[in-house]
Length: 263
Image (tube, rainbow, N blue to C red; front, side, top):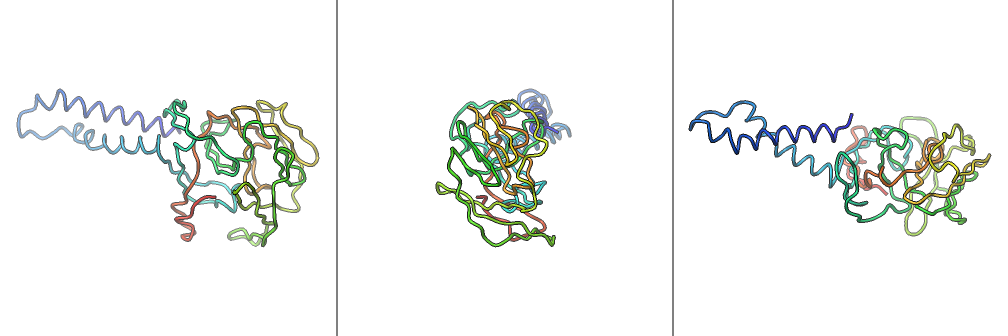
């Protein structure tokens, strides 16, 4: 369901009713006559829909986390906010960028339209930017030939499960985040599909090595052994970017997460 398109259609209909009444029908009604129901509802909903449309299209948009691929940073049931203008101003519906502001940086958590099905929104972490050579070999991440720093911390117990994963602090250049690995999961990539710029990647028994093409990004989930990401379906094009995730505003099953920033 394209909610943005539905909201736009409601905006057009309610706005047309409001303007038609303002410019034509209101002048023809006798003084003291009650507004028709369709005018009353149209005039009432138009400013509300307009405000929601502007906020959602250009400023901030809410999302719900449906899967555990970004554990431990994001948990299933987290309701998050996504900054829509950090990476540039885009026209709603057609999603065409009209103003450049910033570009995604390594380590940022980004929402984007799934390359294989743009009607779906995905969330992952930016690992490689255009021109980077990203290697994930034997569960060690390297960027442009340099291993990304990683240090082990206490194992992570998955919520409501008697199951633990190895937990690490990973990152560099002032950006650090937690990642998970399961020692019994294989390092090689299973069932990778063909994708645009497939030739930029080399798959082997240790994992994958990819060179990120211009205008694209390499994305990975923080739960490395439980995330289908750029290792499996390829790069994310700039036109698929939705925005930068920055805030958890609700989680019905874990109130302590409310108000947490996303790092």
